[in-house]
Image 1 (tube, one colour):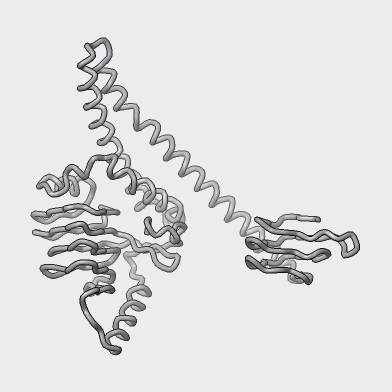
Image 2 (cartoon, one colour):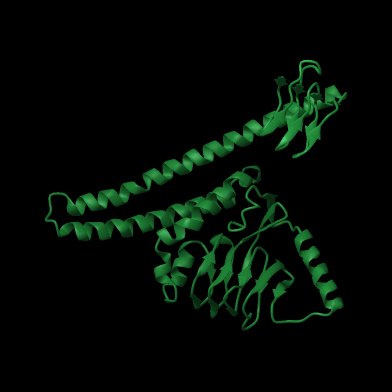
Length: 318
């Protein structure tokens, strides 16, 4: 078996002295590929779960070598950015514990045992504030870094913010008048009174809440993941978003009450609920809805950012 400059994941290879040597050179094998004895695979891409019984040789060597070198360069750059991002985030996570430890030591060191209670309380509050600010910094980096780096930085932001929100204790502000000040502090645009009763908010710098807006157990985000792509755009919310609603990038939610379990996506021209569990549609309306879906997903304006979504298969993130 001879393997050179190739990607071979989980695969099975037959060995037979009479049939000859298996050679895999400058090729990529998909998952669970079976290669028969004596087969040569040169400058080829084999899809997953197939059996290769004949030689696969690409005679166009020159262009393939150039493409292979470009792929290697892109892969090295992608891995380097990914590793650097994870190292920086890990370092920030470790350093984030320093303020809370200092607060606890200042309150409890050389103090009576009961003072440790106040020290622990102060440490918890300090840690919550630190994680909240760190999440805000990661969000700023994800939204403002060069477009070529966003496809690696943005998934890191999603995976960090999703668990860090409860750690930041922001849920204690749900349903209170103070929640709007937290939204403003984190970068959201808030006009007047806003009542937020929970679920989730992402890309706060891209969110705009009108006066007298109520978000009741709904999801409001400045991104939309679909078909391997992520689109980032401003989201405008007004009225009442009932439980189960989802307002994503580019949506303009207007009206007094949305009703439960509706999805809002779209552009600056207006909002288009793409899911309504209460309404019944005839064939013509369904055709119009499909057309609206295609036009929404195909629209790409100058103020949008779009890039490959490396976590598109993780539904909880997108």
